[in-house]
Length: 444
Image (tube, rainbow, N blue to C red; front, side, top):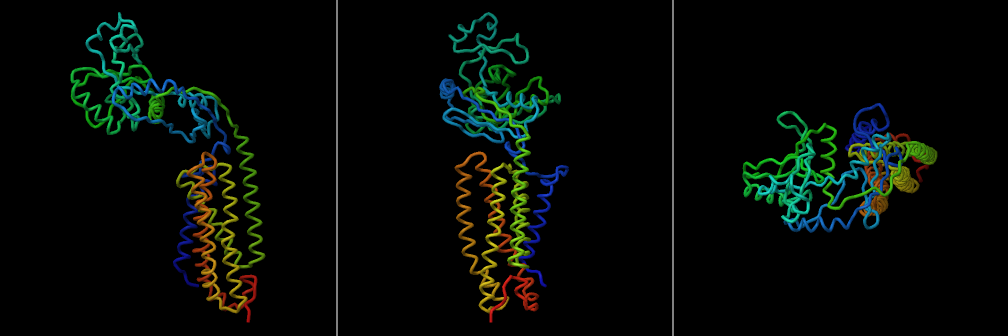
C-alpha cells in the first residue's frame, strides 16, 4: 500500500473535521462551536413596528443639513423585514426574564445620534425661554443627560446625524472611565471637518436620543471623522449604547407589536427528534452499504463519516447557526453523499462484470461516474445558493448546510474514496476475490 495525494487530502480533511467538530459535540469543550438557532435552544421572538410617518420629518431635516441618503439596520442574530413596515427580530439563547428585559430595551431603543451647534448668541437666556420662543429662532431646548436641571439651546437642524455613523466602540478616557468612540463615513467626516473649521471657539452639542451628553468647545478643526461621547457610564451601559449606535440610526421610532418567548424544551425535543432521524438514517445507510457493496461499502461509509465531520467543522469554524431545517439539511446530505458512492460503486461493478482488471475498473468507473455526480451536485448547489440569496431565517440555515454538505461530499466521494482504492488496488488484485470487495465477481 502506497499513500497518494488523494489519501493525504482525505486524512487532512478528517483531522480538520475532528479538531473543529469535537467542541460542538462536547458541551464542556472550549473552542468554536455551532450556534443553535431559536427553534433549537429557545430565545426571544419580537415583531417591531416602525412609525414611518415620523421618518418623513426626520428625512426632511436630513436633507436640510446636506444628508441625502438613508441608512437602516439592526445588528442582531436574525433580523428580517415582515410586510411593509415591520421588523422581525429573533434572539436565540435569551432565557431569563432579566436577559429578555435588557434585550427588549436594547432592540426598541432608537439610539439617535445628532451633532448640533449651540446657539451661542442666546444660550445665556435658555433658562427663561419657552420652547415656542426657541423654535421661533430655529432652536430647540434640550435637557442635559447627566444634570437634568441644566438646559441647552441648540440649532434645530443638526450638523449631521447617525445616518453617517459607521462604527461605535467602547473606550476609556484619560480618567479610565468608559466612553463611546464613534466614527463617520467620508461625507460625514467632510461635513464635520468643515463645520469645526468654521466654528472654532464655539460649542458643539453631542445629542443622543434628544438629550445632550456633552457640549465641548471646538478648539480647532477636527478632521478624520471621529468623535467621543462621554458620560457617567457603567461598562454595561457603555456596551449597550455602543451596540445601539452600531445597529444603525433609526430615523423612525420603533415600537413593540408582538413578543413571544420560545422555551428551551421545544428546542430539546426538536434536537432529540432530529438526532433520532440522523442516527437512524445514518445507521440504515451504513448497514445497506456494507451488506450490498461489502468492503467497498466500508470505504464509502468512511467517506460518509468524514463528510458529516466536515459539515459540523465548517459550520463551527465560521460560526454558522444551526436551525431545525439545517439539521434536516444534514440528514438529506447523508443521502446525497451516499448517492455519489453508489454511482461510483455501480460503475466499478459494471466494469468488473465485463471482465476488466481492478485497475481499469477503478479508473473507468470513476471517469464514467464523474459527470453524473458533478451535474447533480452542481445543479443542487445552484438551487441551494438561490435559497440562501432569496430566503430568510430558517431557509438560509437549510441552504447553508446543503451547500457545505455538497462540497464536502464531492471531496470525500470523488477524491477521498478514489485515493483509497488506488492505495489498495494491488491488494485487491492479489486477493482475486472481487465479491468480497465490491459484492460482484469479475466476468470472464
